Length: 112
Length: 111
Image (tube, rainbow over the protein chains, first blue to last red):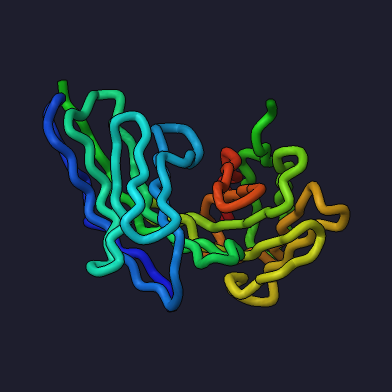
């Protein structure tokens, strides 16, 4: 069955450091891939998405590239800020969008 | 515009009681999803509606869990004869296409 695996957290970085959060997936078909972010005390919100292989999703300085050959969708940001402290979830859905699979989340702590 | 709303935000109940959790999706959103999220984990899919039709309920853990969306808008997730292991955050999301918009969740505590 479909699944998503994320690197375990927490990840602690200093402000302006480079961020990578790894995500790999298992899917039977050709999924769409997503990163969601959950700020403290809030619900999940979409950060970025990619719907086909080699697509790059980007938003707020974050990027992730859909790599079919390595079944990965790693999240990157060149220079993190304290305000980026949150929990990040990788997710996928097959093309019918009926069902979504989420990873277990990676908590990011950014220190000033 | 208004986002997805859920009520109640917190629910404390005693083991064996029934609970009903409500989700009010974004107006016009065709798709509605229910998830359960344990502390420190990602959302776990429970069920999916397309308009009023429940098209996937494969994630419902057992027959104590049920959901409905009779008019294709508001949805109710019902848990009968609650057990302590049902304690979790229950989240609802709605969408037009593949982007889901999540509600704030209902935190359920079964004593």
